[in-house]
Image 1: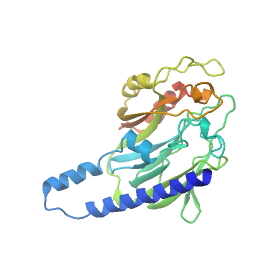
Image 2: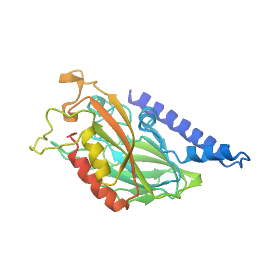
Image 3: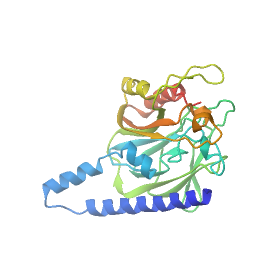
Image 4: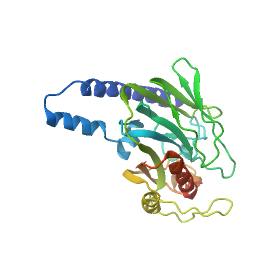
Length: 279
């Protein structure tokens, strides 16, 4: 099952990179039709929708993005071979997204939303180049922590947690586009509906769910660009069919942006991650 998932992920990533090459090839040609050129530029500046990110498990980012905030999903530490039923979803269960394509000059930072109750499981995520050399590490990240933003040279890279080796992803830094904007963009999971029990195992109250974040994101200087609702209940022995730490089987993927300084944005996101009800 794991081999099949990895094979599918690799095939999907290859198709994403192929699609990116087609876009780059087409948009590099000079068009005599101003309407066509305008349409192409609009397409290039489009940030993928939450639905497309969910379905494809991939994001191809436009030059308007200066920093991408790569979200580490709750329960990402659970073994994909035999504990997939504990995930938020079987689409982008480890990172949002699994596969990423960015222009040159786009910085990458990781945000740890993998909650610690009952046992802490900090993450150290490494990025390796095509020769297997480590070119970046987040260092130890505890819950709600983020890593120092990193700009990578053009090329293809693999992503893996140093301890939980099934936590894999892929990144391509395009050689044909350069970041020219100032947006920070990322994804975020939230319960679609308010849950009956919003306390963690230590008694802490976590208010986060979709309507809560629809208020909190704008209040904190973020724009929710798109949303996608989905249902994931595959735990055969769990009440309601979902792993109880997730509190629900109904979730929403949010794609957001902000033009705040990245240090300010990450500090605010840390609080919103803690307020999430996923524990």
